Length: 467
Image 1: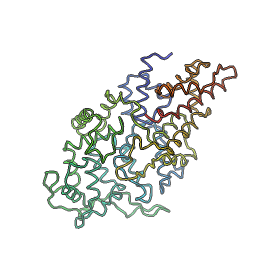
Image 2: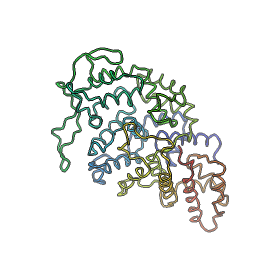
Image 3: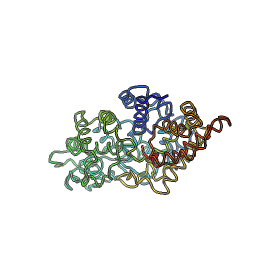
Image 4: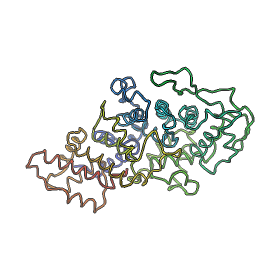
């Protein structure tokens, strides 16, 4: 019988795995629950991916994913990685930055540059924010998406300079229109190399950063009260020194990992849900010289994180990837990966194609009648499939931890296996009423399907839609 202390730790670890990854398998939940919570946080933060297939093997088994000309190929490539990695926080952080630095593949025509941008988030996302901004400013997908290849010393294009300040680092109200113009001047000459890269059937692919010194504005600039012959890196250094930067980035982290905030355009007029949390995280951000990992370590170990269970609506990607992990469906090469990529799109989230440069509006906006039905059906269809390896493991655990002839025992054990999910009393009682009494006399097959059907019913509750 599970003790109250171990169940409390298991519940907390399940919360951590949902937020720092995409939920955990039964095995992962047991593994991380066997250690101190702080150790679990450290292990997730320091994990190195050892399980994802390298691109040459993906090309062998999934030529459609290595094609990368379309959103279907590049998107399914990423979903495959999210669902199979043994370092889930790396992918979750990449998803976080993709939301903050929202770049849409629809404008970029082909998928390779987007895949390269996600790889950049993967490599730098847990590192230093200064380096992240430098890499972002040199990233061909971002350059092309916000037109910095058209930003010339004699013809300034403010698109990237404006979004760098408004949505990527400071937020509205913390700079002037003159600052936008001077920022854009500093990034003149930051462009892409269109020549020399020809791939059969794709043509030339603009995926290499090129600095063009002859196109850079070397004149004196005044930006946020500082004057000098600035380039892009100088601008980033000045941005980092602004108190608004730390507050803006840590609010993004709080919004993504702790609790849903209003959409970003409302931030200038609506204070954070937890100003003390933002102040605490901002202090660590500055004291660590803008490193992301120490901020996340403090966030995951904080009381405000631990107390935030089920205060965020799962994004469609979290629903899909978390379900695949939990049930063990599609653990390796499988022709259905392309089809699976379309599933979060049908739920309202087309990864690699955010609707605007603001990213997705999240929280309750993920839920509408059509999306809710698609979410429930996707999860329920897999949880009631007793042939899937993850479902088999859950069933065996439930059978060991419950009395088969007690509906309450079955429901309680199912909820525990799903991360100690808490249901409202009316919802809980409805599940009890829907379970026929099973004593096992008709064979384990009957019990197995009863448990699987109970799991599927839980997937239909509103509580299951939160993480």
